[in-house]
Length: 178
Image (cartoon, rainbow, N blue to C red; front, side, top):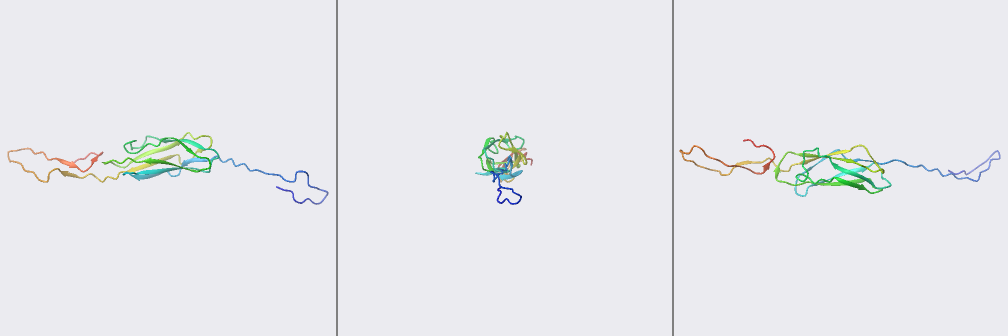
């Protein structure tokens, strides 16, 4: 603020004619997942970027722990690579990406999921909002096909039992009844 003009009644400008007024913004950023869930299809080279965001940039680096909660049906190494561990968002940035690699297999299985969370944030931010993330891993295998190993067979009338071999196109985590 500045006192530009003083007039009337013998009032004069004093020695401090300018006053600086500073507004201190004290908005501690909050950290959360950008979305609650997402899905990815299993396959060669499959992966997904999970995005975390700060509500506003922090003046110092934000450190936190990214956790695999172990509550989903997917299995570490068999279905995905666990990205858990310490993470850092550099000062001035608002987005952070955690990449999850999906393991390709040749097994028919139902879709599986994995749950992630964030914890242990330093004093530069707080955790608020969407604090968990659910990832669904969709299987790319079609249902297994059953077929006889041989298209034809014969047997003598004196034989009372014959074994026929049935094969499956891909292995399955499901029980197969026929």
